[in-house]
Amino acid sequence: MNAPAFDLVLRNARVATASDSFDCDIGIRGGRIAALGDALAGGAREIDAAGRTVTPGGVDAHCHLDQPMAAPVRMADDFDSGTRAAACGGTTTVIPFAAQERGQSLRAAVTDYHHRAEGRAHVDYAFHLIVSDPTPQVLGEELPALIGEGYTSFKIYMTYDDLKLDDGQVLDVLEVARRHGAMAMVHAENADCIEWLTKKLEAAGRTAPRFHAHARPMLVEREATHRAIALSQLVDVPILIVHVSGREAVEQIRWARAQGLNVFAETCPQYLFLTAADLGIDDSYLGARCVCSPPPRDASNQEVIWAGLNDGLFTVFSSDHAPFRYEGTEGKQPGGEQVAFRHIPNGIPGIETRLPLLYSEGVLGGRMTIHKFVELTSTNPAKAYGLHPRKGTVAIGADADLVVWDEREFVLRNEQLHHAVDYTPYEGMTLRAWPGLTLSRGEVVWDGATFHGRAGRGRFLACGEPSLLPRRG
Ligand code: URP
Ligand code: ZN
Ligand code: ZN
Image (cartoon, rainbow, N blue to C red; front, top):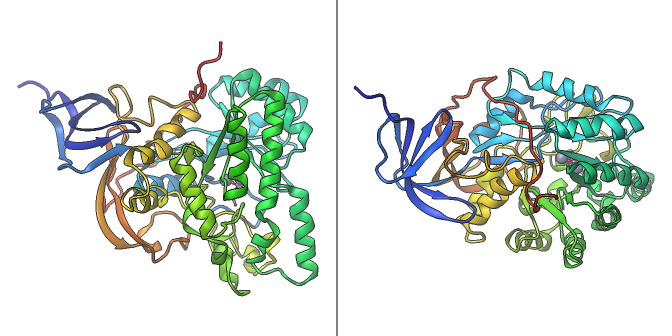
Protein backbone atom coordinates (compact mmCIF):
# COMPACT_ATOMS: atom_id res chain seq x y z
CA MET A 1 0.00 0.00 0.00
CA ASN A 2 1.19 3.52 -0.78
CA ALA A 3 2.31 5.68 2.15
CA PRO A 4 -0.07 8.57 2.88
CA ALA A 5 0.76 11.70 0.90
CA PHE A 6 0.78 13.86 4.00
CA ASP A 7 1.47 13.54 7.72
CA LEU A 8 -1.70 15.48 8.41
CA VAL A 9 -4.50 16.88 6.30
CA LEU A 10 -6.68 19.62 7.73
CA ARG A 11 -9.86 19.32 5.67
CA ASN A 12 -12.45 21.96 4.79
CA ALA A 13 -10.56 24.89 6.22
CA ARG A 14 -11.82 28.44 5.70
CA VAL A 15 -8.36 29.98 5.58
CA ALA A 16 -7.85 33.66 6.32
CA THR A 17 -4.53 35.36 5.67
CA ALA A 18 -3.59 39.03 5.90
CA SER A 19 -4.92 39.49 2.36
CA ASP A 20 -7.22 36.62 1.34
CA SER A 21 -9.86 34.13 2.37
CA PHE A 22 -10.20 30.78 0.63
CA ASP A 23 -11.65 27.34 1.31
CA CYS A 24 -9.29 24.41 0.98
CA ASP A 25 -7.67 21.35 2.49
CA ILE A 26 -4.23 21.92 4.00
CA GLY A 27 -1.69 19.13 3.46
CA ILE A 28 1.15 19.08 5.99
CA ARG A 29 4.41 17.20 5.60
CA GLY A 30 7.56 17.43 7.71
CA GLY A 31 6.07 20.23 9.80
CA ARG A 32 5.46 22.46 6.80
CA ILE A 33 2.51 23.28 4.60
CA ALA A 34 3.05 21.09 1.54
CA ALA A 35 -0.22 21.65 -0.35
CA LEU A 36 -3.31 23.81 -0.37
CA GLY A 37 -6.12 22.50 -2.55
CA ASP A 38 -9.43 20.78 -3.09
CA ALA A 39 -9.84 17.12 -2.15
CA LEU A 40 -6.16 16.55 -1.31
CA ALA A 41 -4.87 12.98 -1.08
CA GLY A 42 -4.96 11.26 2.29
CA GLY A 43 -2.90 12.01 5.36
CA ALA A 44 -1.62 9.71 8.08
CA ARG A 45 -3.91 11.79 10.26
CA GLU A 46 -6.94 13.78 9.16
CA ILE A 47 -8.78 16.53 11.00
CA ASP A 48 -11.99 18.08 9.71
CA ALA A 49 -12.04 21.83 10.22
CA ALA A 50 -15.67 21.75 9.02
CA GLY A 51 -15.72 25.21 7.48
CA ARG A 52 -14.26 26.92 10.54
CA THR A 53 -11.91 29.88 10.23
CA VAL A 54 -8.23 28.91 10.13
CA THR A 55 -5.56 31.57 10.64
CA PRO A 56 -1.78 31.44 10.82
CA GLY A 57 -0.53 30.85 14.37
CA GLY A 58 0.01 34.03 16.30
CA VAL A 59 3.42 35.65 16.59
CA ASP A 60 3.71 37.42 19.93
CA ALA A 61 6.54 39.84 19.31
CA HIS A 62 6.59 41.40 22.76
CA CYS A 63 6.46 39.19 25.82
CA HIS A 64 8.65 38.70 28.86
CA LEU A 65 9.42 35.19 30.04
CA ASP A 66 11.79 34.30 32.87
CA GLN A 67 13.54 37.65 32.52
CA PRO A 68 15.98 38.11 35.43
CA MET A 69 14.61 40.49 38.09
CA ALA A 70 16.07 41.96 41.27
CA ALA A 71 15.22 39.69 44.26
CA PRO A 72 12.71 39.04 45.71
CA VAL A 73 10.77 39.70 42.48
CA ARG A 74 10.58 36.89 39.96
CA MET A 75 8.54 36.44 36.79
CA ALA A 76 5.85 33.80 37.23
CA ASP A 77 6.20 32.37 33.74
CA ASP A 78 9.28 30.68 32.39
CA PHE A 79 9.59 29.21 28.88
CA ASP A 80 7.58 26.16 29.95
CA SER A 81 4.46 27.78 31.41
CA GLY A 82 4.72 30.84 29.16
CA THR A 83 4.83 28.95 25.88
CA ARG A 84 2.18 26.49 27.13
CA ALA A 85 -0.14 29.45 27.71
CA ALA A 86 0.85 30.91 24.34
CA ALA A 87 -0.05 27.68 22.51
CA CYS A 88 -3.42 27.36 24.26
CA GLY A 89 -4.22 30.92 23.18
CA GLY A 90 -3.22 30.31 19.55
CA THR A 91 0.28 31.78 19.59
CA THR A 92 2.91 29.57 17.97
CA THR A 93 5.92 31.89 17.98
CA VAL A 94 7.09 34.06 20.85
CA ILE A 95 9.81 36.69 20.91
CA PRO A 96 10.81 37.51 24.49
CA PHE A 97 13.85 39.53 25.52
CA ALA A 98 17.43 38.61 26.36
CA ALA A 99 18.06 41.53 28.71
CA GLN A 100 21.51 42.91 29.35
CA GLU A 101 22.12 43.99 32.94
CA ARG A 102 24.38 47.00 33.43
CA GLY A 103 27.96 45.79 33.62
CA GLN A 104 27.08 42.53 31.86
CA SER A 105 28.16 41.71 28.34
CA LEU A 106 25.34 41.41 25.83
CA ARG A 107 26.74 38.05 24.74
CA ALA A 108 26.53 36.75 28.33
CA ALA A 109 22.90 37.88 28.52
CA VAL A 110 22.10 35.92 25.35
CA THR A 111 23.94 32.81 26.57
CA ASP A 112 22.10 32.93 29.89
CA TYR A 113 18.75 33.37 28.14
CA HIS A 114 19.36 30.35 25.92
CA HIS A 115 19.92 28.29 29.07
CA ARG A 116 16.61 29.51 30.43
CA ALA A 117 14.81 28.49 27.22
CA GLU A 118 16.54 25.21 26.46
CA GLY A 119 14.43 22.12 26.97
CA ARG A 120 11.44 24.13 28.12
CA ALA A 121 9.68 25.76 25.16
CA HIS A 122 6.57 24.19 23.66
CA VAL A 123 6.46 26.49 20.62
CA ASP A 124 9.14 28.19 18.57
CA TYR A 125 10.91 31.25 19.88
CA ALA A 126 13.33 33.96 18.86
CA PHE A 127 14.99 36.59 21.04
CA HIS A 128 14.98 40.35 21.01
CA LEU A 129 17.88 41.94 22.88
CA ILE A 130 17.57 44.64 25.55
CA VAL A 131 20.55 46.99 25.45
CA SER A 132 21.00 48.74 28.80
CA ASP A 133 24.75 49.29 28.78
CA PRO A 134 25.97 50.40 25.33
CA THR A 135 29.71 50.29 26.01
CA PRO A 136 32.18 50.65 23.12
CA GLN A 137 32.58 46.85 23.23
CA VAL A 138 28.79 46.36 22.92
CA LEU A 139 28.39 48.95 20.16
CA GLY A 140 31.48 48.03 18.19
CA GLU A 141 31.58 44.25 18.51
CA GLU A 142 28.89 42.41 20.44
CA LEU A 143 25.79 44.01 18.98
CA PRO A 144 26.93 43.83 15.33
CA ALA A 145 28.00 40.19 15.80
CA LEU A 146 24.71 39.23 17.47
CA ILE A 147 22.67 40.94 14.75
CA GLY A 148 24.59 38.86 12.21
CA GLU A 149 23.76 35.70 14.17
CA GLY A 150 19.99 36.24 14.08
CA TYR A 151 19.20 38.62 16.94
CA THR A 152 18.04 41.34 14.57
CA SER A 153 15.95 43.47 16.92
CA PHE A 154 16.53 45.12 20.24
CA LYS A 155 14.64 47.20 22.75
CA ILE A 156 15.90 50.37 24.31
CA TYR A 157 14.33 52.14 27.27
CA MET A 158 13.91 55.85 27.92
CA THR A 159 12.71 55.10 31.47
CA TYR A 160 13.35 52.68 34.40
CA ASP A 161 16.51 53.50 36.38
CA ASP A 162 18.26 50.20 35.68
CA LEU A 163 17.58 50.21 31.93
CA LYS A 164 17.23 53.75 30.61
CA LEU A 165 19.60 55.26 28.06
CA ASP A 166 20.25 58.96 27.66
CA ASP A 167 19.75 60.60 24.26
CA GLY A 168 23.40 60.25 23.26
CA GLN A 169 23.30 56.55 24.06
CA VAL A 170 20.08 56.16 22.10
CA LEU A 171 21.77 57.77 19.10
CA ASP A 172 24.76 55.44 19.42
CA VAL A 173 22.56 52.37 19.50
CA LEU A 174 20.35 53.57 16.64
CA GLU A 175 23.46 54.09 14.55
CA VAL A 176 24.33 50.41 14.99
CA ALA A 177 20.76 49.49 13.97
CA ARG A 178 21.14 51.56 10.82
CA ARG A 179 24.53 50.14 9.89
CA HIS A 180 23.51 46.52 10.43
CA GLY A 181 19.85 46.57 9.39
CA ALA A 182 18.33 45.82 12.81
CA MET A 183 14.94 46.91 14.15
CA ALA A 184 15.08 49.18 17.20
CA MET A 185 12.11 49.00 19.56
CA VAL A 186 11.69 51.97 21.88
CA HIS A 187 9.96 52.20 25.26
CA ALA A 188 9.06 55.87 25.18
CA GLU A 189 8.35 57.54 28.53
CA ASN A 190 10.20 60.53 29.99
CA ALA A 191 12.07 59.22 33.06
CA ASP A 192 12.75 62.61 34.69
CA CYS A 193 9.11 63.70 34.49
CA ILE A 194 8.02 60.38 36.01
CA GLU A 195 10.53 60.70 38.86
CA TRP A 196 9.49 64.31 39.55
CA LEU A 197 5.79 63.42 39.62
CA THR A 198 6.42 60.31 41.72
CA LYS A 199 8.24 62.32 44.39
CA LYS A 200 5.41 64.87 44.49
CA LEU A 201 2.82 62.10 44.87
CA GLU A 202 4.86 60.38 47.57
CA ALA A 203 5.28 63.66 49.48
CA ALA A 204 1.49 63.98 49.46
CA GLY A 205 1.07 60.41 50.72
CA ARG A 206 -0.38 59.24 47.41
CA THR A 207 1.30 55.89 47.06
CA ALA A 208 -1.63 53.53 46.29
CA PRO A 209 -1.43 51.58 43.00
CA ARG A 210 -3.79 53.95 41.20
CA PHE A 211 -1.26 56.76 41.51
CA HIS A 212 1.02 54.86 39.13
CA ALA A 213 -1.19 56.28 36.35
CA HIS A 214 -0.92 59.80 37.80
CA ALA A 215 2.87 59.55 37.68
CA ARG A 216 2.81 58.53 34.02
CA PRO A 217 0.32 60.81 32.25
CA MET A 218 0.10 60.78 28.48
CA LEU A 219 2.31 63.85 28.29
CA VAL A 220 5.36 61.86 29.44
CA GLU A 221 4.71 59.27 26.75
CA ARG A 222 4.07 61.95 24.13
CA GLU A 223 7.30 63.81 24.88
CA ALA A 224 9.45 60.69 24.78
CA THR A 225 7.72 59.45 21.62
CA HIS A 226 8.47 62.76 19.94
CA ARG A 227 12.08 62.62 21.10
CA ALA A 228 12.53 59.03 19.94
CA ILE A 229 11.18 60.01 16.53
CA ALA A 230 13.57 62.97 16.35
CA LEU A 231 16.54 60.79 17.35
CA SER A 232 15.67 58.20 14.72
CA GLN A 233 15.28 60.96 12.13
CA LEU A 234 18.73 62.29 13.00
CA VAL A 235 20.26 58.86 12.43
CA ASP A 236 17.90 58.11 9.50
CA VAL A 237 16.85 54.70 10.77
CA PRO A 238 13.41 53.07 11.23
CA ILE A 239 12.16 52.58 14.79
CA LEU A 240 9.19 50.81 16.32
CA ILE A 241 7.52 52.46 19.30
CA VAL A 242 6.25 49.71 21.60
CA HIS A 243 3.12 49.59 23.79
CA VAL A 244 1.52 52.83 22.58
CA SER A 245 -1.32 53.67 24.98
CA GLY A 246 -3.37 56.52 23.54
CA ARG A 247 -4.03 59.71 21.63
CA GLU A 248 -0.98 61.82 22.35
CA ALA A 249 1.62 59.25 21.30
CA VAL A 250 -0.55 58.31 18.32
CA GLU A 251 -0.55 61.94 17.19
CA GLN A 252 3.24 62.04 17.29
CA ILE A 253 3.48 58.88 15.19
CA ARG A 254 0.94 60.20 12.66
CA TRP A 255 3.00 63.37 12.39
CA ALA A 256 6.17 61.34 11.78
CA ARG A 257 4.48 59.25 9.11
CA ALA A 258 3.26 62.43 7.41
CA GLN A 259 6.92 63.49 7.16
CA GLY A 260 7.67 60.21 5.42
CA LEU A 261 9.58 58.76 8.37
CA ASN A 262 9.66 55.01 8.93
CA VAL A 263 8.18 54.99 12.39
CA PHE A 264 6.32 51.79 13.24
CA ALA A 265 4.08 51.28 16.23
CA GLU A 266 2.84 48.51 18.48
CA THR A 267 -0.12 48.42 20.83
CA CYS A 268 -1.44 45.81 23.25
CA PRO A 269 -4.75 44.45 24.64
CA GLN A 270 -4.50 46.50 27.83
CA TYR A 271 -4.97 49.70 25.82
CA LEU A 272 -8.19 48.38 24.28
CA PHE A 273 -9.75 46.57 27.22
CA LEU A 274 -8.49 48.28 30.42
CA THR A 275 -8.62 51.84 31.71
CA ALA A 276 -6.83 53.69 34.50
CA ALA A 277 -9.86 52.83 36.68
CA ASP A 278 -8.63 49.23 36.69
CA LEU A 279 -5.70 50.43 38.80
CA GLY A 280 -8.30 51.37 41.41
CA ILE A 281 -10.88 54.04 42.04
CA ASP A 282 -9.95 54.03 45.71
CA ASP A 283 -6.72 53.14 47.47
CA SER A 284 -7.27 49.35 47.30
CA TYR A 285 -4.09 47.42 46.61
CA LEU A 286 -5.92 45.13 44.17
CA GLY A 287 -5.21 47.73 41.48
CA ALA A 288 -1.58 46.53 41.57
CA ARG A 289 -2.72 43.70 39.27
CA CYS A 290 -3.13 46.20 36.41
CA VAL A 291 0.00 48.28 37.04
CA CYS A 292 1.88 48.42 33.76
CA SER A 293 3.73 51.05 31.79
CA PRO A 294 2.49 53.05 30.04
CA PRO A 295 -0.71 52.74 32.10
CA PRO A 296 -4.08 52.08 30.48
CA ARG A 297 -5.92 55.37 29.77
CA ASP A 298 -9.69 55.91 29.30
CA ALA A 299 -12.56 54.94 27.00
CA SER A 300 -11.88 57.72 24.48
CA ASN A 301 -8.26 56.61 24.19
CA GLN A 302 -9.40 53.04 23.63
CA GLU A 303 -11.27 54.36 20.59
CA VAL A 304 -8.12 56.08 19.33
CA ILE A 305 -6.30 52.74 19.58
CA TRP A 306 -9.07 50.89 17.72
CA ALA A 307 -8.91 53.52 14.96
CA GLY A 308 -5.13 53.19 14.74
CA LEU A 309 -5.35 49.42 14.46
CA ASN A 310 -7.71 49.73 11.53
CA ASP A 311 -6.12 52.56 9.59
CA GLY A 312 -2.54 51.25 9.50
CA LEU A 313 -1.08 53.44 12.25
CA PHE A 314 -0.25 50.28 14.19
CA THR A 315 1.89 47.62 12.64
CA VAL A 316 1.78 45.00 15.37
CA PHE A 317 -0.47 43.93 18.23
CA SER A 318 1.51 42.23 21.01
CA SER A 319 0.71 41.10 24.53
CA ASP A 320 3.57 42.71 26.48
CA HIS A 321 3.01 39.71 28.76
CA ALA A 322 4.97 40.56 31.92
CA PRO A 323 3.86 37.91 34.40
CA PHE A 324 3.90 38.60 38.14
CA ARG A 325 1.73 36.82 40.69
CA TYR A 326 -0.52 38.95 42.90
CA GLU A 327 -0.21 36.75 45.99
CA GLY A 328 3.05 35.65 47.54
CA THR A 329 6.39 37.36 47.89
CA GLU A 330 7.79 37.38 44.33
CA GLY A 331 5.23 39.43 42.44
CA LYS A 332 2.99 42.41 42.96
CA GLN A 333 3.60 42.30 46.73
CA PRO A 334 7.42 42.10 46.87
CA GLY A 335 8.52 40.35 50.04
CA GLY A 336 4.84 39.97 50.91
CA GLU A 337 4.42 43.73 51.39
CA GLN A 338 1.83 46.09 49.92
CA VAL A 339 4.37 48.61 48.66
CA ALA A 340 4.20 52.17 47.31
CA PHE A 341 3.35 52.21 43.60
CA ARG A 342 6.93 52.99 42.53
CA HIS A 343 8.00 49.56 43.87
CA ILE A 344 5.20 47.49 42.27
CA PRO A 345 6.64 45.29 39.49
CA ASN A 346 5.38 46.68 36.20
CA GLY A 347 3.48 44.48 33.81
CA ILE A 348 0.42 42.30 33.38
CA PRO A 349 -0.21 38.83 31.93
CA GLY A 350 -1.76 38.47 28.46
CA ILE A 351 0.10 35.94 26.32
CA GLU A 352 -2.87 33.54 26.21
CA THR A 353 -5.68 36.09 25.93
CA ARG A 354 -4.14 38.36 23.26
CA LEU A 355 -5.65 36.60 20.23
CA PRO A 356 -9.03 35.56 21.69
CA LEU A 357 -9.66 39.11 22.95
CA LEU A 358 -8.97 40.68 19.56
CA TYR A 359 -10.79 37.96 17.63
CA SER A 360 -13.84 38.25 19.92
CA GLU A 361 -14.11 42.00 20.19
CA GLY A 362 -12.43 42.97 16.94
CA VAL A 363 -13.39 40.39 14.31
CA LEU A 364 -16.65 39.05 15.78
CA GLY A 365 -17.51 42.42 17.32
CA GLY A 366 -17.48 43.95 13.83
CA ARG A 367 -14.60 46.32 14.55
CA MET A 368 -11.93 44.74 12.36
CA THR A 369 -11.68 42.44 9.37
CA ILE A 370 -10.23 38.99 9.81
CA HIS A 371 -7.43 40.06 7.43
CA LYS A 372 -6.45 42.99 9.62
CA PHE A 373 -6.50 40.65 12.62
CA VAL A 374 -4.06 38.27 10.91
CA GLU A 375 -1.86 41.12 9.71
CA LEU A 376 -1.51 42.67 13.17
CA THR A 377 -1.14 39.51 15.22
CA SER A 378 0.89 37.27 12.95
CA THR A 379 2.03 38.47 9.51
CA ASN A 380 3.40 41.88 10.42
CA PRO A 381 5.22 40.78 13.57
CA ALA A 382 6.84 38.00 11.53
CA LYS A 383 7.88 40.57 8.91
CA ALA A 384 9.02 43.20 11.43
CA TYR A 385 11.40 40.74 13.06
CA GLY A 386 12.67 38.77 10.08
CA LEU A 387 10.65 35.55 10.45
CA HIS A 388 8.39 35.86 7.40
CA PRO A 389 7.39 33.85 5.33
CA ARG A 390 8.42 30.87 7.47
CA LYS A 391 6.09 32.28 10.13
CA GLY A 392 3.07 34.55 9.89
CA THR A 393 1.20 33.18 6.89
CA VAL A 394 -0.59 30.20 5.36
CA ALA A 395 1.42 29.35 2.25
CA ILE A 396 3.19 26.39 0.72
CA GLY A 397 6.57 26.03 2.39
CA ALA A 398 5.60 27.94 5.53
CA ASP A 399 5.73 26.19 8.89
CA ALA A 400 2.39 24.53 9.61
CA ASP A 401 1.57 26.84 12.50
CA LEU A 402 -2.20 27.14 12.38
CA VAL A 403 -5.17 27.99 14.54
CA VAL A 404 -8.69 26.62 14.00
CA TRP A 405 -11.14 28.94 15.73
CA ASP A 406 -14.13 27.86 17.82
CA GLU A 407 -16.73 30.59 17.84
CA ARG A 408 -18.72 30.25 21.07
CA GLU A 409 -19.59 32.55 23.92
CA PHE A 410 -18.14 31.98 27.40
CA VAL A 411 -17.06 33.91 30.46
CA LEU A 412 -13.29 34.11 30.90
CA ARG A 413 -11.91 32.83 34.21
CA ASN A 414 -8.26 32.69 35.23
CA GLU A 415 -8.63 29.03 36.16
CA GLN A 416 -9.14 28.27 32.43
CA LEU A 417 -5.75 29.74 31.57
CA HIS A 418 -2.41 27.98 31.44
CA HIS A 419 0.00 30.64 32.64
CA ALA A 420 1.48 30.55 36.15
CA VAL A 421 -0.05 33.87 37.15
CA ASP A 422 -2.82 33.83 39.77
CA TYR A 423 -5.07 36.34 38.00
CA THR A 424 -6.07 37.70 34.62
CA PRO A 425 -6.93 41.39 34.20
CA TYR A 426 -9.81 40.22 31.96
CA GLU A 427 -11.54 38.03 34.60
CA GLY A 428 -15.30 37.86 33.96
CA MET A 429 -15.21 39.22 30.41
CA THR A 430 -17.52 37.52 27.93
CA LEU A 431 -15.51 36.26 24.97
CA ARG A 432 -16.93 34.93 21.71
CA ALA A 433 -14.09 32.74 20.49
CA TRP A 434 -11.15 30.64 21.55
CA PRO A 435 -8.71 28.46 19.58
CA GLY A 436 -10.25 25.03 19.10
CA LEU A 437 -6.99 23.70 17.72
CA THR A 438 -3.44 25.00 17.64
CA LEU A 439 -0.88 23.34 15.37
CA SER A 440 2.80 24.07 15.82
CA ARG A 441 4.88 22.78 12.90
CA GLY A 442 2.05 20.37 12.12
CA GLU A 443 1.72 18.97 15.66
CA VAL A 444 -1.46 19.47 17.65
CA VAL A 445 -0.35 21.31 20.78
CA TRP A 446 -3.83 22.38 21.91
CA ASP A 447 -7.14 20.76 20.94
CA GLY A 448 -9.52 23.19 22.59
CA ALA A 449 -9.63 21.23 25.83
CA THR A 450 -6.26 19.60 26.42
CA PHE A 451 -2.70 20.78 26.05
CA HIS A 452 -0.50 18.36 24.10
CA GLY A 453 2.83 20.19 24.04
CA ARG A 454 6.16 18.79 25.08
CA ALA A 455 8.76 20.89 26.83
CA GLY A 456 11.73 21.22 24.52
CA ARG A 457 9.86 20.71 21.22
CA GLY A 458 9.93 24.47 20.60
CA ARG A 459 12.94 25.52 18.50
CA PHE A 460 15.06 28.64 18.57
CA LEU A 461 14.63 30.75 15.42
CA ALA A 462 17.43 32.93 14.16
CA CYS A 463 15.82 36.05 12.68
CA GLY A 464 16.65 37.55 9.32
CA GLU A 465 16.54 41.18 8.36
CA PRO A 466 13.19 42.89 9.05
CA SER A 467 11.13 42.76 5.84
CA LEU A 468 8.61 45.56 6.41
CA LEU A 469 10.73 47.84 4.26
CA PRO A 470 12.27 47.32 0.82
CA ARG A 471 15.62 45.53 1.01
CA ARG A 472 18.60 47.76 1.57
CA GLY A 473 20.85 48.18 -1.45
O1 URP B 1 4.75 47.49 32.39
C1 URP B 1 5.33 46.88 31.50
N1 URP B 1 5.11 47.19 30.24
N2 URP B 1 6.17 45.91 31.83
C2 URP B 1 6.95 45.14 30.97
C3 URP B 1 8.25 45.81 30.64
C4 URP B 1 8.10 46.77 29.51
O2 URP B 1 8.46 47.91 29.67
O3 URP B 1 7.62 46.39 28.45
ZN1 ZN C 1 8.47 48.66 27.72
ZN1 ZN D 1 7.38 44.76 27.66
